[in-house]
Length: 428
Image (cartoon, rainbow, N blue to C red; front, side, top):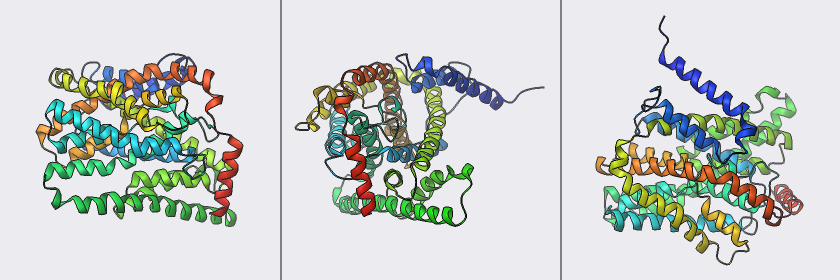
């Protein structure tokens, strides 16, 4: 009796999950991230190993998979946001989004245009694809729970939650420029629709849907009760409804689900156990989806494109990881009340991953020319791979050292923050 190939897929993935779970206490002591382990496993499962996974880089379902991974992760990031909604509490986030992200996009675009000879449209599109940091693969450097008040972890988590949404206008900008280099034909529409309306609709959609679902859930709990086993599905329902309704009105669904997570965290209608339960549920989904996505990335890597695009990738990825991100971060945080070590680590932990993969597949589905699609695809894949390797090896030892030496000095007072959050929630 022959055994279908997908049965072997199930067996191998099951063994991988069992291994990383039972060995988690041992893995956390090593300079390895789970993403790096999944990536290596994916390579062995691909054509250069057992040949179990065989997938083309432009597969349509990869766009849908990364889309789901990102929205679940963004909601989880939002629930972890344990600070009042004012610039003082979010000072590092404001700088990382308002200054660092545009500087990163601009620097990559300049390098791609003048260093690689790309047209401006393709150069800006590449910058927008690679600018977002990853909210999925950066678990080692992000907030661990809703009671973690470390400034470095908070800044990296909130940055990953917001720049995965706010890179979208620049992706559209690059796509429009590729199709038409006459700005007068589309620039005003881009500002009005893709910049102002889509961001506004994303914020409003997240607030409105989260409040409606919270209010409805509260009333039904009081009137009829909700089965405990079904509680966690409310989080999934909130993610899907928020994303779908916001996208239906041409808003940014990524931004909406992050905002929805923030307002679920601030909601007075849910007790702390319910919020923690939703966070644990979305975290579990995030980890499972991460396994599948990074396995696929590893399986899609090929040796042949390395010879064709290796030089371009080393230029872009090397500059991004070792020069652009660190320098742009240092510039963006000038005048901020942060320890120099914290600023340096903000610059180092610019992990690229699933968000960039989604934007790439989105651009491919938009029908960009093949002569642009191929280099952008492989540069993005190889940059993600290098980031997973380099940051995966360095994250654990650097964060352990940072926590031991500066952890307590870089925390805002939790009592003050919680009181302010509760006060604002009461006003809401």
